[in-house]
Amino acid sequence: MDLTAWAGLDDAARLAHTTSLAARVGGRALTPSTLERDGVEFAFVPGGRVRLGFDAERWQPTRGQLDSYARSVEFGLPENPAEYLEFQVSAPRTVDLPPLLMAVTSAPLWPEPDETEAALAERGLRPPSPDEWEHACRSGSTTLFRWGDECPLDRLPGKGFEAEPNPFGLRLNFDPYILEASTDPGVVLGGDGGTTICGGHTGLLAWLPLAASFRDPELAGLFAGEEEGLYGDLEVRAVIEI
Image 1 (cartoon, rainbow, N blue to C red):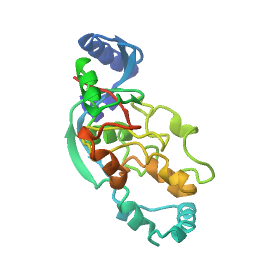
Image 2: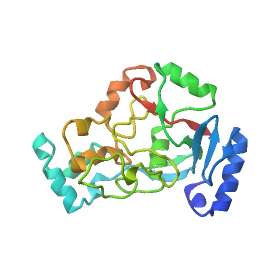
Image 3: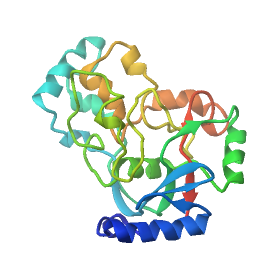
Image 4: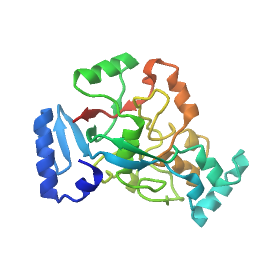
C-alpha cells in the first residue's frame, strides 16, 4: 500500500488493514495504524514512490530564522544560510520504497555491531535504511522539518510539539541528542548527538539537526570505522518487513 492509498482510508479501513498485518507477523492491533508484537509497538509505514531530501537553494527562511543565523556567522559559518544548509541535508531525490512496520520508539544498541544485527535478525527484525527512516520521519511532508519550514527560536528542541507522534504514529526526530543507526554504516539519523547545542548554539542552528533530511557525514564517520557502524551510543529503530 502506498502513501496515497493509505491517506484515503478512514479509521475503520486502517484498523482492518493493521489487524490483518498483526495476524501476519504474530502481533495484535492497538490502533488503526499501530500494533504490538513481543512487547514492542510498531506503526505501519506505507511505501510507494516518494520524494526525499531537501533543496537548500529553494529554501525560503523567515526573517527570524535569518536573524538567528546571522548571530551565528561569527562561529565561522558561511554568510549565506542556504550554503550552510546544503551540507547539512540529503540531496533531493525520488525513490521507491516498500511498505513496512517500524518501531514507534528507538532502543539502545547491543555492545557490538554483530550482536545487534544478530539479535534483531533472530526476531525477524532489522534496522531501517536511510531512505526508509527519512520517509517514515517525513510521513509525506516535503518541508525542511517534518512539521513545516519554521521552528521555535526562543527555546531548545526536545519537549514541545516536536515530541508528539508524527502522522504515521512514530515518535522520532524530536531530540537532537538521540542518534539512530541505519543499514548504512556511514549514515546516522535523528540529530547530531547534541553537538550543536553543546557548542553553545541556540535558535535556528539548534533546530537544524531535527531537519527531516539532516545528515552529518563527519559525525557518521566516527561510527563508520567500526564493523557495520552500529556501536557506541547509537540507538536502533527496528523494522519488520511485510
